[in-house]
Length: 302
Ligand code: DON
Image (cartoon, protein in one colour):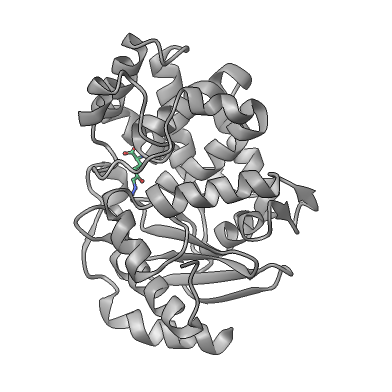
């Protein structure tokens, strides 16, 4: 594994810093672009890492996976009455399909879908953002994971688009709670700061038929785990899901903080981070690192 990571590092180093750090959330634009880390967590709990793998970063849309898993534990199949399971083929913050599809978002990983899941969690938990934070602390074994309140407030100050989606869904009766309250909780989830090592550990259950080695708990059933991985494979990288499948060939989920998680089922989980993004909002060097990884291991889910 260590030599695999050194090969990946050498392959992507020339790309680190290429692209653009997200600036539509002003607090994120201050992050230094020239950083890169990768961490692997094997199914027997061993960690391998290189570069800035211990630096905490804003997990952003990667939180949509934890949000969904938490909701699945409570709602089971009832989730799929409120949100679909199809790729959108559109940017993560697009509203175009929402109106003609009667307020049912295409999948839980676009913003509209994650807002519906947040609304469902709002109905179950007194403070859903604390529930998600405690969940990732347990999954990662790191009790010091925090919500970056500056990022969360910055997102709330620039919430118009997400708010518009939520109100549109409310007009179709696909949103139960007070919109502003749900938005606050959703932004807190996105503003969790975690490192590549934290994230690789936290998602390892997705590579291990739903079993978390660290928690010694069955987080999801093997069947639910397969479903989450299928959703990540088809919708985890938004309008780039197809080319990510083509280049990398693994279930993955990206965030505008520059992180990407990916799953090698039955073997290991991985998290890469490099803050500069390509034109659709995915980490440019991060995606290249995962492409290099599957090339070197000669394996993908396809
Ligand atoms: O709601 C937003 O726009 C952000 N908090 C999350 C977007 C995101 O990470 C999309 N990922 N590539």
